[in-house]
Length: 379
Image 1 (cartoon, one colour):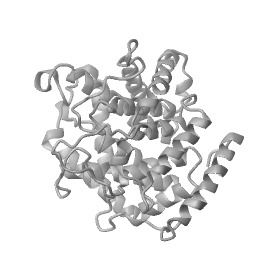
Image 2 (cartoon, one colour):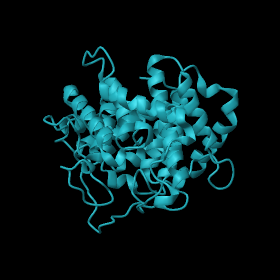
Image 3 (cartoon, helix red, strand yellow):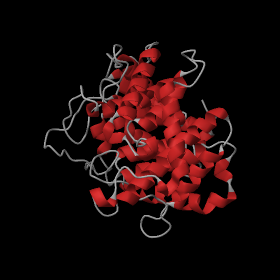
Image 4 (cartoon, helix red, strand yellow):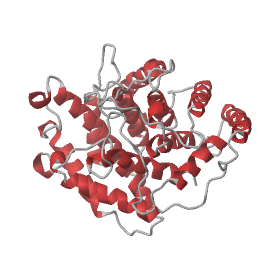
């Protein structure tokens, strides 16, 4: 756990006191998490889904590369390396190697690489939106691998430079990246722009060798910080959770009172079983949802692995992992892994999907990645 300022210590004390009363209303839910979850099964699921994605015809791109997806590749890249040491693996997994080779090829190609979406097929502006989203994803993935190795490689520096080159420099979106938008939340919708900017902040702060202090990028960082702070009040809860996560990495994104207020908002949405539901994270501070069901079906109300993993991770990264709400979230994650398949449950907020299909597993891909991240950070 990170060293805390006096303010954070007081915050933890206040939250802990509030948790005692809250836990008393849920005596059937343990405040201390169970001890085990199946790491090998989680690794098998993540690897199998990465192989599926790499072989899925719809994900194929030029030069033998594949789309760098928000829901499958990004969570995989952040989570899978954390399982290597506990499983005693001597080398990077084959699916990881294939993923990284594809990303490195696309970074080298730059604007010569075909985007997943294009103006010609999907409408005006879609080429740029897709290139922007991929640039942030590439930078985040490569920075995370470099951080583990402790050295900033030239391809990662190239990916970060490409990301900055696409940042909006003026206007109402100054500091952000125009994000792909097909009204499919949470990855490709109007509110996804903010999530992308938060992930860019995480990428920059994660990059080793004190990259975030590079004088050349300070104007970009100033714009990014200003955007994230300026737009935060209007964001759905999921984006403010992403901001909380990013604030543990990059300085000057949130004050301690803002973190305390956000933690209180997060705890209000915790389910009686200890988890969080993605549907609830789509609400803004006025209780209005940013999301819609394209098939007119009802929103899910059950806890899921993506929402719970993301929330617990953000709390842990900010030194709040030991308080009762976070511990109940950890307990939910341990109790709700499918031990046979290795994955955690999650469901689309846009429409009903068959969980037995490859596409139907996209949300479980994200859920499993973030569940692993949260559980490995809970030690």
